[in-house]
Length: 231
Length: 298
Image 1 (tube, rainbow over the protein chains, first blue to last red):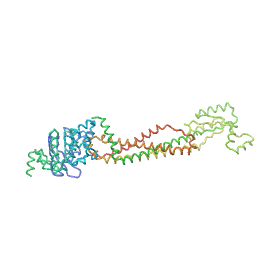
Image 2 (cartoon, rainbow over the protein chains, first blue to last red; image 1 turned 180 degrees about the vertical axis):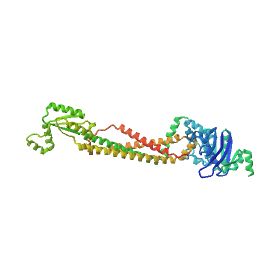
Image 3 (tube, rainbow over the protein chains, first blue to last red; image 1 turned 90 degrees about the horizontal axis):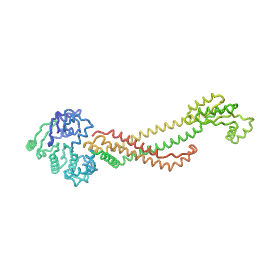
């Protein structure tokens, strides 16, 4: 589903943010991307949804080489990738329902059909009773669930989450991670960037560790969890 | 996927944009309204000027003085030649009639003319020239053609007056055009700047739209519609202003300048109103087109 070959990312005048990244993620896999702040986790995710362009190397997403993608083709790629951010990026003046429907508006889905899809998605994330609330009246966990609903409402094959629990307390963190796990079980490929080692130990998923822009380890869930326990 | 759903979204989004930043849009609409109001007034003034020129130009006549000894058949022959050359009508003024006119124009002094031993005025043909030939150049050419005809002793057509009037009209038209271009340019800049503010205030929404797969055209379309709506609303305000102006100030101006303009004809208002609406829509569209062209990439 995702393949990266010798990918580099550097900004003029600075050392590379990512160096010689080689990564293969299968369809339906759940992958944690971990490492200290500044390791390049966010940049790697940005490369996957064309938020940034790689300086060197090839990136295949769903068999398509996005290192050479035309600007005009980027929106069509993004329709197949859901993105979740630490800072939510919700529109405060729109209701929960409208925030989730936003993705479908872009795709030109008729309103009645969009309403059905939005309600199904809000049910999935447990927020059907908050459809007409405004984001600022929701808790952090609820807001993040709205973001996940927005990212998933058009059935993307990949979900990228950048520190999705970074602003949440431990209870809400578990709530959100359970939800992402459930999404993965339904068949969506999920990549989660996090520096929270407790998550790695709890969920025992494949873990790719980045340090100073290099992949320093790529382990299956059990091995990664054991290592976390030892630390 | 439905195009109808997208179009419906664009209009909802554009209307939402107007509600979202009412002050910014108020400035743009007011600017467009003022520009169109001024253009509407200038257009009315231009038409009045045209009327004035036509009424003065209608009086442009070429007076052709004839030798007194010409026989009536020769005069008729000359008249035909002049009418062909000028594209207008020629009227014979006999010496007696010319003297009577002069006496009338002199008023009390006219009585002195009766003391003259004989009528010194020659017969003449008064030639009204077709409107398309009333330029100073064409009148001069016509006068030269007439002067060389046998039986013609002189030609007079008020050359200086025609030249001056034409020069004034040309200067006024050019000035009006320059002023209109400046106002148009300033309006487009202001409309574009206000829309950029509106776009900036919705940058988060645009960022999210792009993240969930919106194309550039999809993001820009509502702002273009916003510009169009601004233009149409501005045109509506300008039309109301012009209507009110016509009701309140129009009668006073007409009575003040009636001696210059003569009887005024009221032209049908539908066409100029439509032109104003189209101009407003175009102003808004061009302004928003420039504004969205400067989108920063997300």
